[in-house]
Image: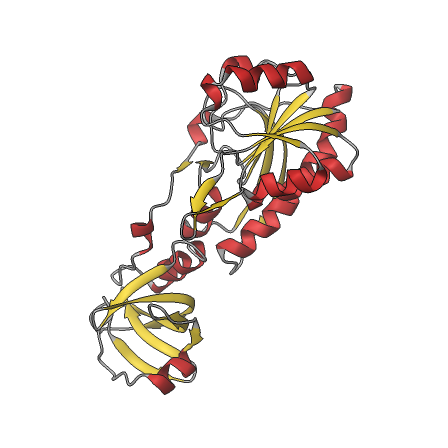
Length: 308
């Protein structure tokens, strides 16, 4: 199949690699423009780096919807399908209608649940038992197209990074599996029930602030959902502290929210919304992540200390 691939972050790379490995003709890759990061050094997107490794031409329009040159290049290639994985820009109707088999998207949720920019983080935040990936034919609405295939996995106690890596590989595998059915006309296209749709918007750095009035289970989910970015953080003696690993203890607590009730080699035990959260790994500004036991050997912290 002749394919144009659109994607930007790490999540999209396994799908691009899988398309090339499966023998599809990936003629063009479209990704976000290079950005200045890390002390103003210009960096390529992970997808651009993968495309260059495969020797594929790369297009980087600032705004795809108004870039006539990019549209002309894609049209001249004549793709059978445009594959979109976390590209980061909307596609207009003329682009959606261009390929023979349409534009196909690999989305990191079990649609119609969690349409939008951050489905994996929100699946953890909301305490879902499972999540997965959906391959769909794109329409003009956000993640609203007809579904072609799904694959699910339990969330268990995974953090975002672990879930992200798992779903990236699952999405690539699922797409490669369904492409032949799309090509031979045997694929099924199932409309989404819009009444069941939920949305996962962009995450802001401030979303990582811990509210100790929430339950230990909710704070644990926040920690896992925002690992590695933006991180779950709070204040201790005027310093920002990030929590990286924690465990709800299932034990009730009557102390004010944010109170340290015990500290030992096993962790920092903090009262949260009437129950106890054991923090097992944390980080101070400018320091490395450390296990709670190592933190206690370098910092004196008394029972009754307040985190806020």
